[in-house]
Every structure is written in structure tokens, then in C-alpha cells.
Amino acid sequence: MKLNSISFLFKLLILQYLSIQCLSDDFDFFYFVQQWPGAYCDSNQSCCYPITPILPAEFNIYGLRPTKNDGSTPLNCDIHSVFDKSKISDLIENLELNWPSLRCPQLKSIKLWSHEWMKHGTCSESKLTQHDYFQTALKLKKKLNIIQILENAGIEPDDKFYDTSSILDAIQQATGFLPGIVCNRDPGLKSQLLKVYMCVDTSGSNFIECPGVPMGSCGDTVQFSKFWVNLFC
Image (tube, rainbow, N blue to C red; front, side, top):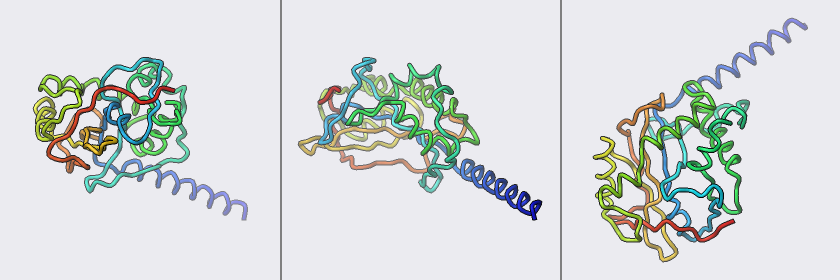
């Protein structure tokens, strides 16, 4: 009886391990998403912008999300793979600059990173370790300087309206791939550029053509809001 119980427990552990592996293997590409802080803060929701470190006026990382070709996103693939700050200690300073939390009440960035790892990062464990996951996001941001791309095309964060097609074309010409964009609305209900989506292969190394790109809530023209915040805390 005792041997049967041990055998049963062993089989249960194997099945649990295999189910986690299957989940973490089950994605086709990453969505790499960057967010414009000016648009996030210029809305009906308040924002808590970090005072230190002083962040540069550029897009910041919103997420690196394993995704299937049908557009679905696997979530929370390994509840046992907890976030461990010590595993990314050499990346903390860079993450604070490039992947900050803007939520109110102020959420410490470490909690944001923990959330992102548990919800999304664990679904890429077959390809990336915890350290690799965050390092990959930082490398992709360095590789894709959206504010520079747009400014080179004469598109600047000056509260003016720009053709949506011009924004898409500028990024596509610079990268070779069509991005997706998502907009929100300011207190006056004007549509403004909020997020830019790019697709990345499963190694996290190369931008690729997206099976489908988000085009959420953006009209023919969108406002590129100034870089400002409405609440410091």
C-alpha cells in the first residue's frame, strides 16, 4: 500500500511537471509592448510618476507577452515559479528607468515586475529564464527607440494630431515590420497614441511580421500628447 501511494504521488508530480511544460511551450511569438507615459497620464485615470530616478521622455516598456497565432495569450503558466528579485539584481537600475510602474496609488516597480513574471513570463520558461525574460525586454527596447523613430519622421509629442498611417509607416520603415497601435482618450475625449505593439520571435531576439496587430480605439488621426504627468507621488 505504501509503495502504491509513493508511485501515485510520483506519477502526479510527473503529470504536473509535464502540464506546466506544455503550457510554457505553447506560444508562437511575443508581443513586445511599449507605452507612452504622456498619454497614460493625460487621461481620466491619475498616474503616479516616479520622482526618482528621473525618467527620460521616451516610451517605456509595458510588457513582453507570449502569444499564440490566433491572438490568445497563455497566462499564469507556472504558479511555482515565483518572482525572485535576486535573480535580476544586475538589471534593477535599468528596469527602474525603462519598465516603471505608473499606477496610482503608487505601486512599487518590483511588484509590477513580479506581476508581469507570474502572469506572462512563466509562459515563456521553455525559452527564457527569469533573468533572460527581463533582460530580453530591455534589449528590445534599446533596439526599438520609438520616440527617435517618430521624431525622425517629424512626429513629435507636441499635442498635435498626426495621421495614424504616418505613425505606422514611420515605424514600419525603420523596422521592416508593421506595428500595432492602441489609443486611449484624454479628458476631452481626444484619441491619443498610447501603446505600440511589435512582434518578436520565440527566442526574444528578432522582430517578425505579426500574424495580427492590435489597432485599438485609434481613428484616422491621433494626438501625440506632450510628455507630462498630472500627479507626482
